[in-house]
Image (cartoon, rainbow, N blue to C red; front, side):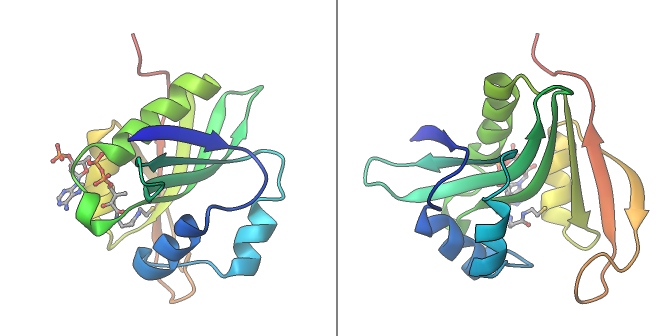
Length: 148
Ligand SMILES: CC(C)(COP(=O)(O)OP(=O)(O)OC[C@H]1O[C@@H](n2cnc3c(N)ncnc32)[C@H](O)[C@@H]1OP(=O)(O)O)[C@@H](O)C(=O)NCCC(=O)NCCS
């Protein structure tokens, strides 16, 4: 596996298909293309020797304030618990010199909440009716660079 980062440009189609197949609240193609037009948007992904994407993180970075907002984290079900998504968080921190991470996660998504807590994120607020189905979201953050 090697990690790659793109800022703008064409969306690797695997990210779109992974999102549609496995993300709790997938985006439409239009939502993806609008998001990727933002100059502050970054897409980090793990790709294997065959060119297959197994894991990605999409977010926005404010380089001046060293803040990264995570919009989506997804690993293919067959590639989970191998450290892929954790590795991408670490890669974002190192390559963009990020200090603080912020995100929203559905309150029922205990797997993802466990993943974030393991990486040192903490819930600091809750947004009621955050998702289209009326579900609430925890607001989570990790402040301060983790690397030594
Ligand atoms: C959350 C998610 C991105 C984690 O991806 P991943 O590549 O498996 O993450 P890692 O391998 O780096 O896992 C780190 C930790 O997450 C938790 N975790 C990941 N997969 C897990 C699983 N299947 N069962 C239990 N815990 C799991 C564990 O704490 C794990 O640490 P461990 O392997 O030492 O036990 C992945 O489960 C996923 O794609 N979920 C569906 C999409 C989603 O809900 N995204 C978040 C929405 S905001």
